Length: 452
Image (cartoon, rainbow, N blue to C red; front, side):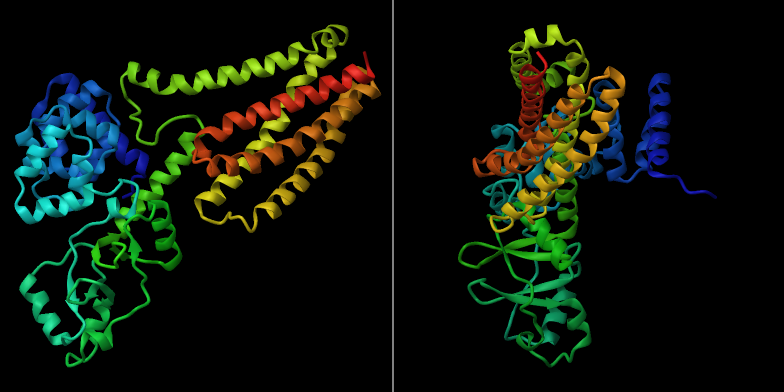
């Protein structure tokens, strides 16, 4: 039997659910939703318009709603939570991991958050409050406080007996964390060593010091890089005094990597990675209008530059025909460089020691591509307008604009990062302005000097 791909696996339940909604077959809807994993249910809800989502949410098994909330994006989570009262929220978060509970509580009004926290037992509440004390995009906000710790002076036999008493161990546990009597992190005891080494050995002789602890204030992007670089499954999180606070597991890091990728892609269009595809029109308008306004200002700047050469354009209409070519070539070349630089920043590959080398390299690439394509465009222009001068002018403008695009593509994101702004969010608009203005000034300026 052929396997379904991801798109088919998602489309079939959505289609079946839509048909059941239209016909009012709620028993069929309940049966369909009950057959799905919470992650699949979450994906299904994110694929539904708000009205259909509102109808489906009460039908989902109350015991699974907490898991579903932990999988959906922040916008959809906020939308679903408004259909739940405090008692529902307390029930939904009762059996969730501490880090998932913290994610849900962060989107609640303060008075509701306090009520949910009061309903928890003391130990669980303290763990959640520990996470809430840290920023969401740091290691402290990402970690889970559900960890197993052991002392360095006990034997592996004692550790094994302790694990048998516990019964269950946290998900994605590949190591136990070794601490002293003040909970200072000392190292890790891998489960593979625990079961394979002599039980008479002490933990200090079987433990490893290779996994470096992560400070709770470390940005989540740096955490993801460390997991990727060292092929980690889990890593300890400590406070400034090296006291163990919790751990970060690979499933949380996968979410970070996915969010980083979505952020980079959507930020280029001025969108949020948490934006609900089916959000209400008013909400979408509010979020997108800001960057449309910024783009309008930059467009007026380009139009003003063109207006400076209105007399030149009136005398040589061919300039108006060829202007978009100059701007387009610069825009594409600049976007290539910008994408490369933002990716290097995200991966932690770009730093003060190699920025100048990258700038020189990109300018050389821009100049070389400029010469290659300037020759081709100049030749086509000559054949089209029977003007050698016009061909030479557009060729020169192309070379200048591609060099400027390379320079701007490297320098703009670097400068934005130094000033604390997100390069992925605002660099694209600034780059387009630079390539448009430089391209138009070069092309129309040369035309004013040598043709008119």
